[in-house]
Image (cartoon, rainbow, N blue to C red; front, side, top):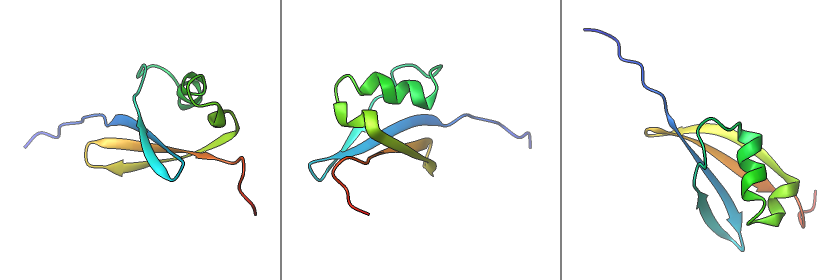
Amino acid sequence: MALQVTSLKRAFKMKKDGKEIILPDPNPDMTIEEVLQFHSGSYPELTTSTISGPVPDGNKAVYTFKTTVGTKG
């Protein structure tokens, strides 16, 4: 049996007002930091976010953008 290599699609998520938002991947050739900058135009709170992941989820590699503004500790 031959081994088949497939790449995982990227998915991005963040929390806003207690709700999880799934963000689309604008371009698979962009770095994760470039995707963060791209989405910060729509979500300014992402300018001070950190990136965690990827965490495999089925056929996706999920990255989480965690905002640091307004959090304690």
